[in-house]
Amino acid sequence: MLVNIILFIFFYISSALMVIGYGQLSKSLIISNQKNFNEIGFIGLFGFLFLYFISSIIIFFYNINNYVSTIIFLLGITLFFIFLLKKQYSKKSLIIFSFIIIIFLPLAIISEPNEDFFFYYKPYMNYLQNSKIIFGIVNLNNTLAFSTYSLYDIIIFFNISEKFENNFSIPILIFYFFYLTFLIELLLKKFNIFYFVVLFLSIVSFAKLRDLGTSIPPQLLLIIIACLIYSLLLNGFKEEIITKIFLLLVFAILLRFNSVIVIPLILLLFIYYYKFILPYLINNKKGVIFMFIVLALFFSKNIINSGCLVYPVKSLCFDNLYWSSNLKVTEQKYNKLSSDSKGWAFYAKENFQITDKFVWTNLEKENFYNYNIYLKTSPVFWSQYWIKDPNYKKILNLFLLGLFALIILNTFKKGKIYKSNIDKKNISIFFTSIFLVIVCWFLVSPQMRYGGYFCFIIFVSLIVSLFDKYINRNSHIVTLIFLIVLAVSYVNIKNIKRVYNDFGENKFINFPWPNNHKLNKNIDYITFTKDSTLYNQRLRTKKLVFDNGEQAILMCGDIDFPCIPVGKEVCLGEKTVYNSFIFYKKNTRENQCYEFMNKNILY
Image (tube, rainbow, N blue to C red; front, side, top):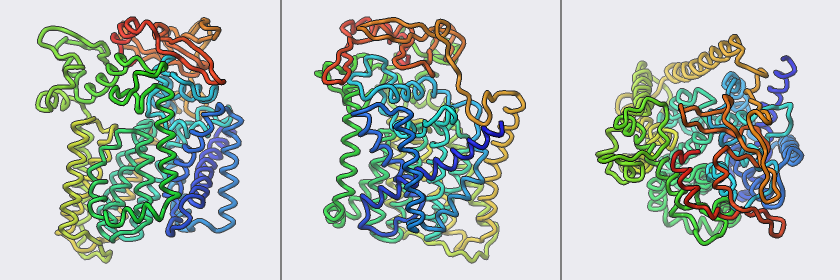
């Protein structure tokens, strides 16, 4: 156990150093003409973006196996120390970041990964490790084609050895730490209650590593973008702020395309600073070209994987490519995911008296809306079922936390910390833009994991800052320290208690690493051959299953690529090889595939 703990801490620290190394390299190569980019928070986030760029290039020519990952990992650590010796980092930023990774160490220790990991992300990383990019991977197993896997295109570089087993969670946590560092650095430059409340709400809201997954990192980037736009309104136009906004916006879209809900805020930016934007683009060609290339790689990969610019959005798919997805299945998948975010599952359970945890079948009966029709109903109708989702409690909690912060902040009246504030005109426009963002979120994907945290952390923080402005001119250091200590204590006590209980109940297989559940050949899966290719077929057993009574979703987990859950072979397309690239053609039995998938479109 001692050896595991030492390896865990080594990986925990070295992962952060590796990302910082690539962040500093990318900064030197792409935005070297601009100053004020020594903050570790931004450098770290830029490092993640640059790793995505590297991964996207490699996968076109070669699979990202352990050897490739190890080279990339060690090179990043080497770059960190080279730049450290050249004194390229801000000492204050390094101290802040080091303090964060120390005090939040309990967050890093989990016994079980995110519940989607063995269904979506582990099989996807198996794909990256075993093959270069495949045309039409959607026709092999459509769960490998989602456009939300960009974070795991990065995390694959941390998969360097079996000694660091199931280490996927650490990079996500490091990402979160860079976010916190960025907020603190922003706060220290010019104190503002808005930034402070954003920091407080963020610490309390993201208290469990298992809940971060792929849905939270893009929201963290959107929160930073909102803070940077607020900073522009507060301090005036600065080129380096615009650069950060554009780079982080591109990164947010790569991680989750529905980050486009931030458009009202971006429009505010263009309307306000339209005179500066064009000269900025001309004077920062390297940065603009880099962003264009990264977006081009993102959309190219999506087209190659699924025939869609963004999968599974039918309107962004090309039907004339012979490796394109089955568009009927693609449309159903999108409709199901969208309607579920608006409460369709609660509507179906009420109408069919369903007691099962999940509703996967596209149910039909008279005077009942299946999920295709439900999606077209007005918000007046579907909101009555959306409100039955406990999701709304998370929104309410943010408002209650904001109220609590406002009360504490004004406990002492004679503070000495001056608070900078935006003028009335700018705050009105910013408030209106945030409100429009919330409207977009509510109409498109009203779930906290799909942008809700970004919307309401910013909205609540803005409201608190407005009330605080009129109640108390200056802030007292005691109230600020109390709120941060309280938030950090809440997170650590919660996680230390969880780790203690899980350890006492023997939930860890290999403490302190997350559990890696092995699936066994001829028990959990079998093999079959088609088109001279050996496939692994996942069978229904008690391991790694979303169990829903008669229905179940089977996870491929650590089964070698290619893996197909039983039943989905009806959707398997013909495999061909052209110029060393593998192609999976669209299955000619489209209707059979559709009929099978329509029983459980999420399978």
